[in-house]
Amino acid sequence: MTEGNFVDYVKLNVNSGNGGKGSIHLHREKFITKGGPDGGDGGRGGHVIVRANSNLWTLYNFKFKRHFSSGHGEHGSKNRSSGAQGEDIYIEVPVGTIFKNTESNQILFEITKNKQEVILLEGGLGGLGNWHFKSSTRQTPRYAQPGKKGKELAVTLELKVLADVGLVGFPNAGKSTLLAAVTGAKPKIADYEFTTLKPNLGIVPYRDFKSFVMADIPGIIEGAGKGKGLGHYFLRHIERNSILLFMIPCDSKNVKKDFEILISELKEYNSELLDKKFAIALTKCDLLDEELLKEYEIEMKDHFKKIPHFLISSISNQGLDSLKDGLWTLLNES
Ligand code: GDP
Ligand code: MG
Image 1 (tube, rainbow, N blue to C red):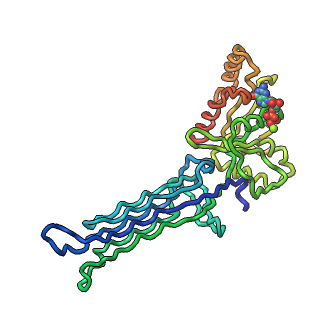
Image 2 (cartoon, rainbow, N blue to C red):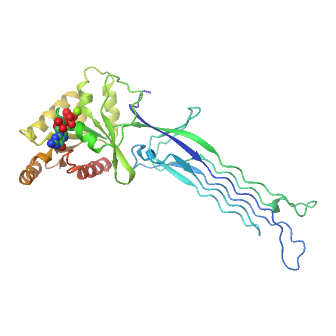
Image 3 (cartoon, rainbow, N blue to C red):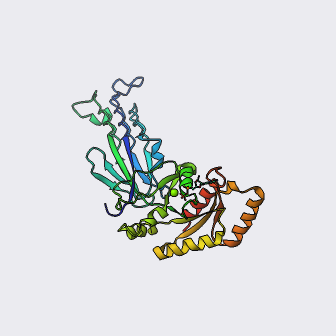
């Protein structure tokens, strides 16, 4: 694996619905003695369908649901009436998700475009009703097809995870504490190219099962001299709509100056980073009383007119929801 860095994995079990039975029915009506066969067909079992959703960025929601089954088809009935089709179900996944057969480890397909749909498992076909089997020699067939059984499959989903939000700040700015406060899960780190570097990275659950990935970028930057291929990581990183969140503690002597130092260090490291979107968090705001907080708000507005900024505390959770809302908006605007 050369492109991906972190891989988010999940194993799922899926079942498609059985087809309904064909009906064995002979038409009966007053005064008609031999009405003939009129048993309808069984309905098809529901498919299990995978659908891409560009609002999803991780496999985080599968943490809560790992088994998916579609509906069974209904049986056919008299008057040649067909049974209803079983309900199809849709499994929504982020673009870039790879599906593998868990048993064989073979790749089944990769989801590459938003709204793309792939039938992962077809529902069983419904059986034909007995009226199909009527012939000149067999006027009243007492036979109909059973429905085909649905299928079962164990699949593994894999997604290359790139950090959407990178944290940039001096030591003690509160990066690790923020990461711990807002992330719900750590993706498994597999095949990481730069094994000496284990970036601190986590998934931030966001409203309605959305999520994005946050990483401690300076951890990566510190090892930049040693780790080769790092430029590659960042290039991949830059391809994606992503943000640098600058973190400056509120007890900094000069917030604006600190920001400028961080920018110049980044520039020296890789000037392409400066093309990314920026946001600023003034951290540890629980240390400020209300009056000071107001003053800082005004000061931040003054210093950073064009850069979205947030006053937060990872310890008291202050401002963390607005921070997530702001980051989500930035991530999704083009
Ligand atoms: P990092 O070096 O940027 O990862 O910073 P850390 O997250 O390790 O935090 C450095 C120190 O600041 C630790 O002692 C934290 O407990 C403290 N800290 C971090 N966030 C907050 C906060 O929101 N409020 C307060 N009062 N202290 C914080
Ligand atoms: Mg840290």
